[in-house]
Image 1 (cartoon, rainbow, N blue to C red):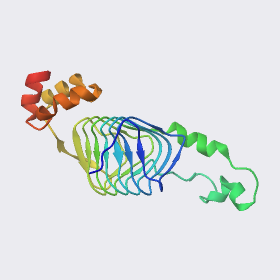
Image 2 (cartoon, one colour):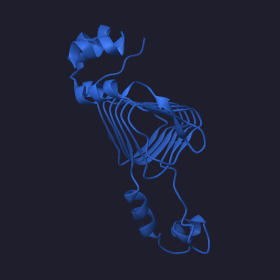
Image 3 (cartoon, one colour):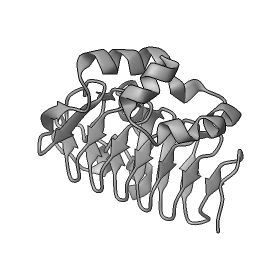
Image 4 (spheres, helix red, strand yellow):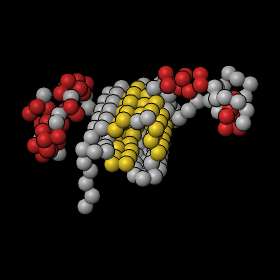
Length: 201
């Protein structure tokens, strides 16, 4: 049986550039990450791509998810890479202003978020704590905490809980509990949210 550890688990085929990974994290095969922070206990399944993103703790990211797929400079005469990745084509220096602009459009993913298979989170979007992004969704606008969004473009389907429960979960911030406390309280995570909040909120 495989187990994770406080040290990040990164598949040998994954490519990470200027990233920070928290404890108990996992990065699966074929993942490409650029300037991304991955919070404690979060994982990316095979063939995800992330760029310029801050991903919270306990994020559940399914295979083939794209976080911050890059935009091309549409206001230029050509959309093509040669206008900003010029060195690749022997045409001169790269245009760093395009990459600098992309960095200003960071994606923020909250804690305990689930992003379904093949979803895309577009540049500049914030996904709130506890939210769910459905399979294949294209998220172009911010997602409220504990809200399920689906479709292209993604739209709210429903909240996971009523507003009072959401408020109490956000205030409790259980994702900041230490590892030993998570272990001790694991049985309560397997019960109802109402009983959990009654005990700890």
